[in-house]
Image 1 (tube, one colour):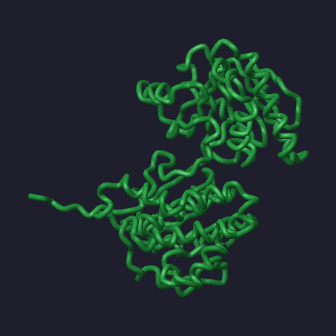
Image 2: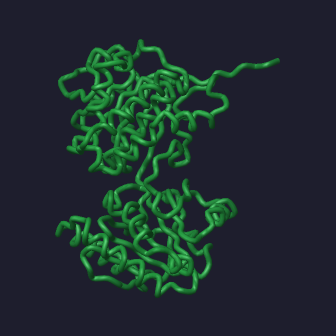
Image 3: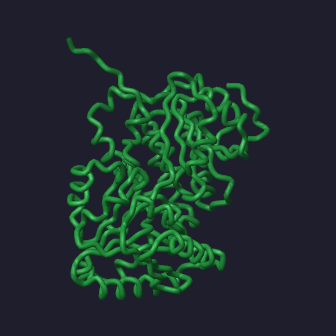
Length: 399
């Protein structure tokens, strides 16, 4: 690979490993070496005192523990017939710091030579993980340097094209505009692409069930789902849908408990409050039947009297929530379009949500999870079996 390295900043490995990537052999799916490396990475991350200040880094480290990886491996019966596709180019998002590591983990377990472009934003989480990787490269895992190359570079059509021209799979995380820009760089004829575009998510709560739960525990889980990433994660709920007979009491209790936590843990910037109110005004100009329930800068709630397929075009972050009270679960169908990713539930049978999706053939909803677990790390995302999709299957005709 011939590439102009002037624009590149290497966070792990270097130009030699990148230039030699086309000649580096792919590894089998769940190779012993990749599993050992990730297990050691888990231990190295947890040794770092900085890790204690970041829940997402801690969660990632536990997710790649040896026992966890071995449990995941057992779910792939045909893993002995799968091999990495080759060079996997990952374009990581700029709004979820640890996402790059989740993407690279799936890629390494698939057996690929993994090239990851991370955001220019100065996330300490990225530093912690990359520092741990480099420590392993300097000790017992020098041989893995050619399989994990983490880089930064400014927006550059030339560099993106040079990297794309030799990759066997390209994974793009980002908004529609980002994906459109990256797609301008052509891929080799046999290369495949996985895209993870801008999505939205919703929470569905049974008010009667909620009234029997510990309000602080629920608030903690919902805070993690939303405020921890400023609702920038696609999996963060933007609308809360209430069911049951205790809706008004549940709302009062739920939002009061959340407000208490938000005011003690969240740093609200003036511009965030302005942006939330501006979005409320935009929604108000677009349709009737909305109501501003809360004027608090920390939590801005907008009640709507109808769910429509374009309602989520008016989503906002930093503690901006739409609310709707449903008499029947089927009323949520209009917001379950292609852009709907995750439905988190409390007191709702997850299978009931899946039944609505299946019976109505809706184009969205890839995950149904308990409230408080939307940020959970998983090898299935946006409808992809991540590791499997990054491999190729060697078929044997038994005849």
